[in-house]
Image (tube, rainbow, N blue to C red; front, side):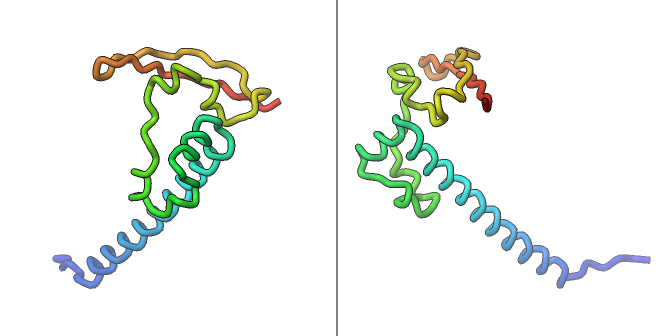
Length: 118
């Protein structure tokens, strides 16, 4: 018995994929906004960065608005790594260098933060 392709099923699958993609995009943007808001409210570095650039988390209304946020340079982390912390100091147990990588003739230090709830 030969199975013939069902054109209705293919159209439905395409529509379903578009719906799922739309839902995933909205969810990803929701989580991104939550992360940006947390950094703004809890990280001295990102709070200062946003204020220096006249930005608020509410200014990020779509993925394309991400270009408004300036890049964080390795020197920013080297100059004041504690300003990046976004958890209370009492919850921070260790701050250890994990690995050093050479990327484009710049050394990037990957850091491991071990957090505990007391």
